[in-house]
Length: 277
Image 1 (cartoon, one colour):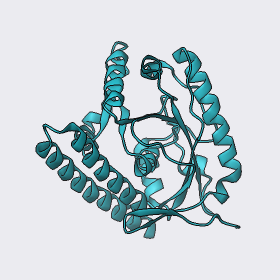
Image 2: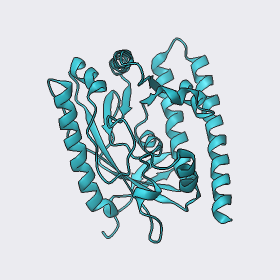
Image 3: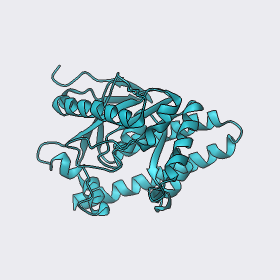
Image 4: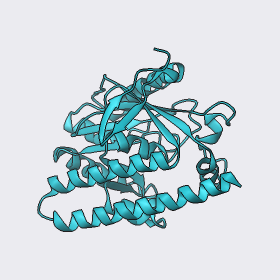
């Protein structure tokens, strides 16, 4: 009973927050047609506020290690669940690369089309070139771009090989690639994060999302590396970036209990003392 009430409350709250962000994004787009820099900044501010609200609504505590990159940046991370997006966007909003099907989803489709999302049609091989051009344009204009080169979600126990196709802009622009690792933990008595949060497609997404939204809460840990990656070819870049993220991921699994909480006070950020300190 309580779990069902929690699910419906959270779903309703997310829909309301999504409506507010949609109105914000539409208004910003209408008022900043001739000022793309201002439009990017204002939509990013709305996305950051929205994602922090979503994190609070779904009971996701944010724990941060390292420093998020500042625009312009090119950031890659491992991919575990849809919660990765509000997690990263709450800390370093920018353009996110998404599969094209999302553009037609109810509610989320309209929201993503009006915020910072680059859609990739994975059924058309030539669409990679188009998206790479868009990524390069965004970075040249001083924006940040985030994507998940594993190409799919996982149970979060390891980092899968990175697909090199969307790393081409980093080669052409000769820019460093920032890396982040994501790990989730669940409280005592709850299912392990590989079952509760991780999603490898073994169950229907709707069923998985309902289970996650019905749980009291969980913790998201993210480690931004101080080290960046550069290479001469995208394949080599994919190998080196995956190795760095996998190393961060393993380290984060070991030390996640000591990562500092992200504390928000009146819109400002500070780090709480690590547990056990």
